[in-house]
Each structure stands twice: as C-alpha cells, then as structure tokens.
Image 1 (tube, helix red, strand yellow):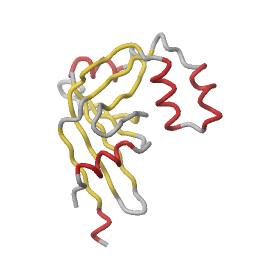
Image 2 (image 1 turned 135 degrees about the horizontal axis):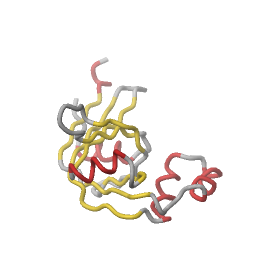
Image 3 (image 1 turned 60 degrees about the horizontal axis):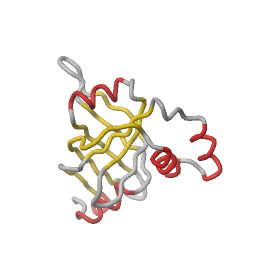
Length: 140
C-alpha cells in the first residue's frame, strides 16, 4: 500500500541511510551510493559530500538526483524521492553538525565535525518532486 503524504514525509525525516542515484552518462548505469541526509517534512532534502567527488560532479551536471530510504522491520517500508537540485554551495559548520548528529552518538559528533574539512565539502539541496512509497505490512 502506498503511504499517505504525511506518512511518507515522516518516514523520510527519520535517520535512514539513503541510497542516492544520479545519471552517470552514456553507456553507464546510474551512480548509486549511500549517503547521510537531512529532511524536514515539507522542506528540501540536504546532503553533503566532497565537492571533487564523482557524485558531486555528476549531480552538478545532471541537475537532479533521486534517493531511496527503506527499512525491513517490523514491516518492509520504503520511500523514493526524485527532484531538482535547488542549491549547492559550501557546507556550513551548522549543516555538518546537524547531519552528523542524525547518525552518530552524541559523544562522537564533536570529534567527527572537528576531523572534517569544511573547505572541501559541498551541500546539495533537492526539492522533492516525484515520490514513490509503500508499506508492505498490510500484506501479511
């Protein structure tokens, strides 16, 4: 069963590891890599990466990407979202801290942030445009 608009936004706002996919060019399948991200229902999806990475170059060229988040228990549920990049720019300390805090234990965030090089990180923001979702729990 597809998720309601509110349920899919709430699920995407949880701290899942996303699978990000972006067009990789002629004769290649899309690049598909795991990323940490941040999302507030109704807002934009944000993630950061090394500005010189293949992922960053491909996203800049394509101007859009998709993300898939999923869980396998207690029921299989997923949300896939695709849309245009609405902004990319240098990552701020606040963005790095916020995204890191979603995935790391509180006592590890400071060390992770201090060990990161803000000079090489870029944050991409995507406006969700197309959604797919399902919760297969009702099938059991």
